[in-house]
Amino acid sequence: MSLRSIDFVENRKRMLAGELYYSFTPDLVADRRRCKAACLEYNTYSTSGVASRRQVVEAWKRLICDESPLPSAAATPEEDEDLLADFPWVDGPIKMDYGFNVKFGTNVYCNFNSTWLDTCQITVGSRTLIGPNCSFFSATHPIDPAIRNGTKGPEAGKPINIGEDCWFGGNCIVLPGVTIGKGVVIGAGSVVTKNVPDYVVVAGNPAKVIKKVEQPGKEVVEEGVLDDAKEQ
Image (cartoon, rainbow, N blue to C red; front, top):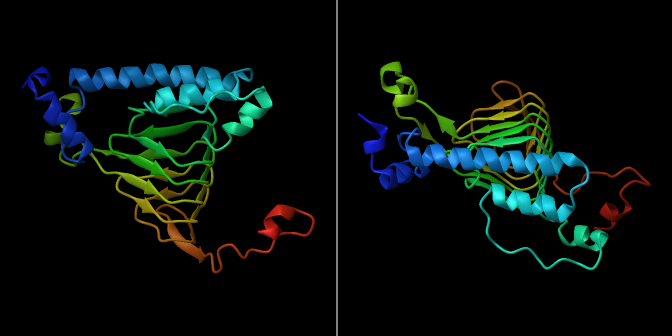
């Protein structure tokens, strides 16, 4: 079977639905090439040290295919940076497959060397912090090698959903189909293979609950530090 003979529209629908589909059809190969070029552009801006906040945000929006308009530029670079403060802060380099399946909430921070296999949608909740070298794999392959069949066989995916106010230590991996609740801490080096409830700390491979956040929002703040937090 030639992959050029497949119904591209139906194949794409199957990919987004998490069903078996073929990833080396010409249209999806073109999408990944576009994303690779957009990643290169974004990484250039985000690692240059001289690009403005607006330039970085604009490159980010091109990477994830977000066509919504930005607020008009403020009078000064400092005011403009404040205006764009809640847009994601993502340190390059970053790698994605498609870009259009990655959705970040507001005030998300992602450290360098993150990888996003966004066959299906990967959603990151607002105010989530992601350490360096973290990977999010929504893509998966058949176990049977005869079906898997290298680049000529089908693959699949499952969405990843990450709640608000999470914190990922460095070198974490999240596998396909995982939902992570609100306020979760993922210990450094963890491999998250199953769903995680709200307000817990998980760690290990596979990651397991090691602690609960008993009273979210009630953690004692050291005197003289983060005075604003104590007033809230």
